[in-house]
Length: 635
Image 1 (cartoon, rainbow, N blue to C red):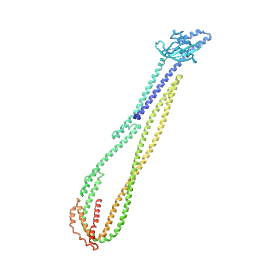
Image 2: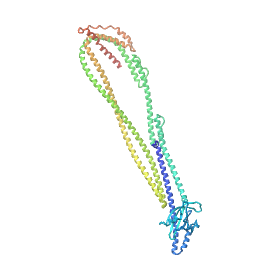
Image 3: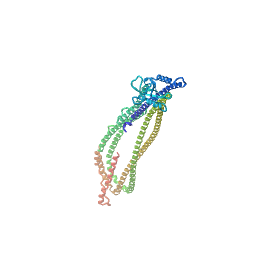
Image 4: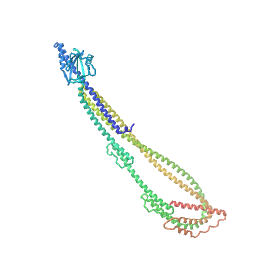
């Protein structure tokens, strides 16, 4: 079906065109019935006139029967009376007998006493022979149409004749009326009807055009504005917002959408500005962190950040100050570490006894931590799986919410269309009411006309019945549309409740997803921490086992500790700090008095064992390096 047939304007104009066709059909139907009634009434008038003429002849026949007149006198008197009798503008009477002999004719006196059975009209109709057939018929009277010359005219015209047999004399009394006279009387009726129809058509077209434009004009402007909004143009105002109709409500709704789009654009603009600020903050932090990774502890950020990131700048500067102070203290503590190496040698005896029991405890602790680590990893994997399922449920709930929202909008459009259809049906109902009123007026006029308006009254009654059926049908359609609108409203309410329920479900699923995500992150962090603890405990267990063997070489470990202190001083010297000079600290440590040489190795160990034990203190040094790295990461 062509797209134009779906337009509301096309349907409104179709209703107007149907109304115009109905008005034109009704007018022409009434005119045709009026013409038929006029001809029927003229035939009735002609019959009444012949009845009058026959009544005159019957009166003369009664005088003949009473003996006051002779038959010849009555015939002569009757002929004279009929020749002188007139009615209307050109009505007269003529008489011929059953043998087609003309007995009286006021405008053809030369025909009297002659046989006119061979007389034909322009169509070849034998006029007097047809009159003879009517006179000899059982009714003895009837009408016929033929062409005959009007008095004082040269051309024949169509004529409606009526003849009636007067049996006592054998005379066929006839009269007639020319069609042109009837048409003259009907011309004013046609003119009045056509003028009335033209007025009604003009009024209906004007009203229909105004109604159609009042609906389609704002709709077209609103559609164009909505298309512009769809293309991204949101600055222009929405038309028809002040219209007090459903179109105005639609325009106001569109205006709400436009304001929402403007607010969205403002939010996007502010978001872009915040993104620009964030990129600047990230760039600055990246530069300073790069310098910090090369050991420069003086790279504080002096340029102020945006208000949202100012605290980050202050925290960075505070961290640098703390780290700088810590490195200074580490440099100062290197000398104390060298001095403490001698004290370690003295405490090695006590450490020997403690490490034996510590080794057994650490072994059990390592096994328990390993089991806990496996359990926490399993919980973290389960939490991640639940998070994935929750995210999928949240996505499906959001999609369902969008579908419900689209259904609400579609039902609102159906409800607006039903309201427009109800208005159109109201217009049809008004037309049916006006038609019924016109038919009622026509029936009243027909009743006033009496017998002559009986046919016109029948037509008016049919038209009134047709208008009543149209009104009933429009009422039924309006009722059905009203019921449909109520069902649509119920559907909108139910779908709205479903949308609200889905929205609440989305909110609950979102909360659950956030909680599960937090649990997953926490479990992952716990798993990572337990792994690190497990690794540390394993290393500590290994170190403890080794310490149980190498307590006797604690003096050599003290020497190695002193060497590590020198290395630490060298490492710290790479930092650029404020308030101290790491290089001078390194020189101070290097020039300190050396630690006493390690004591002799007990006789219980051989030479090979001594070489092996000299390598075993390295894990302690590695552990100390790892502790320093962890301290750096904490800062």
